[in-house]
Length: 400
Ligand code: ADP
Ligand code: MG
Image (tube, rainbow, N blue to C red; front, side, top):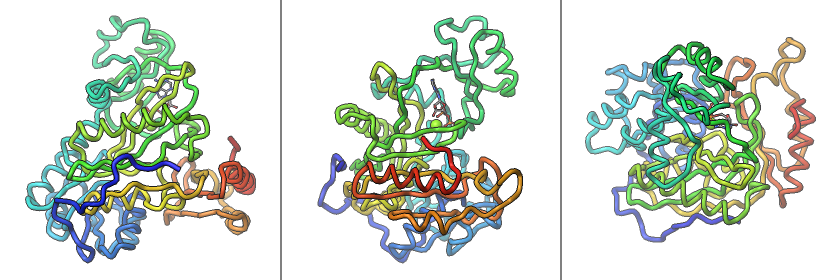
């Protein structure tokens, strides 16, 4: 089983925010909901800021501030009621995080605005990887039609991605030649983009690290991820195709990336492993990540526990994977059978051993919408895989 690199016994030198305090989270989706569960388990109250009255986290929080992310009154209320504030998605404007930090001068906002700003911008993100000595895909900025003529031919075929606001395969187009590139840039709204060379992937992994205000870094074991249509479908831990040496390289790279940002909180770095065995950083998220949901049921400290610990100044101890596992994402498509809305047969999957069902409390299922996930834990990876395949078959999910 994997261990974090730098566990330590000494208490944090930073002021510890004790249970009983209120912890704030910007955004009310499923990540904030699972954060709230972890915080509440430890005795904290939770405040969620999200305009949606039925947001998954708003439904379970002690306080739901229903305002926009840049609303001055909402931000002031958040700062007033919270002992510390974190964020559940990177597109909370960095200016809002900066404003929160000034409104609550003595209280931590983790991660900080400057670190989040790097994660919001694919070009800045790649520059940061390179600064940390971590390879990324060959790429070039595309900010005008004129630039397209001068793009190095070695970057084609490639993937054109918007510099900002892309997620789950949205905001990107695959292109083979220069004409397609020009059309794709217009299709994406003629906004600032990054063209990346299309790389020959063998498989994809991600590494989640948590860094405390005192600089201690711990990590979860690397997870192997399968995407379908740009959306995460299956995560397996331990990563079946990842050797120990490459895993150590990826973990060390993720730690360097967090440390060089002066990062406080949970950070996920996605990597490609190429067909020649090379490791390439893809992108990072300044928060818990869909690929880390398995840690709730398969590790003794989950990514959400780490988020609570990092923001409260609690000691970060190395998480331990206690059960090999497979996580399956449950997208809204599951609720539709030949166009008719049906409730998936949960009882049939709950009859299988080691199945942990998580549903996010979203009122409406829509194709592609993340509705929940299911983690199968077992004594060994073979059994976890076998049961997960049975669960997938019972739900009508495509098998890997
Ligand atoms: P998103 O923000 O939507 O997750 P990513 O940059 O992670 O965007 O790209 C989504 C997926 O597209 C990746 O997980 C990978 O499968 C594929 N992909 C992205 N960039 C490349 C690349 N340069 N070469 C090959 N495949 C890529
Ligand atoms: Mg991605």
